[in-house]
Length: 208
Image (cartoon, rainbow, N blue to C red; front, side, top):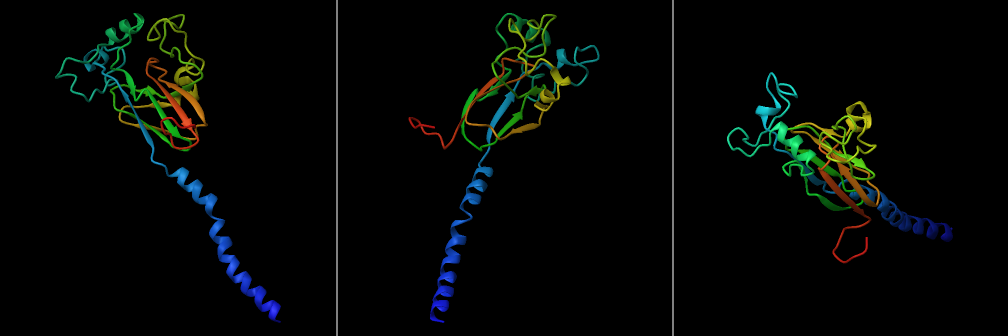
């Protein structure tokens, strides 16, 4: 009888300790899922006057520049955008910021379009041209680069369409594996970001 009493007492003492240690993995998973997202901003300086209008090449309401382009003359015209890209000197006003980022595995990316045009945030194996090219693919906004396979189908490809970010909207990217990931805009392919995923929080001089 004493043995049974002691055994029951031991069970009562050990059970709470077991419950204390069991939820640890779940707690770690919850911590990973609730990490603060890292933001990347898509920017451009399209000129509404030349991009839009009844006779505009892209319709009446394509460029929605909210940066006072009609007041300050810093916006890029439609023809200049193509001319600069063809010359191998694409407009720097079309950009992702930051251009590179290191995150801990499990940290989400939030890509916000603060420009006036649609963009995509498409993962590619290698940087290259997008789907707005000339007859051979290398003209248009691609300069001298051939379209990368991930962008080649344009918005007819569901995989590309899913990475589209309209003006004022955002895209969330999750589940990136450890290592280096390359992203570019399939419309304006000089807009590029390198994302490095580490297994733990990044510290200068430390191993990942």
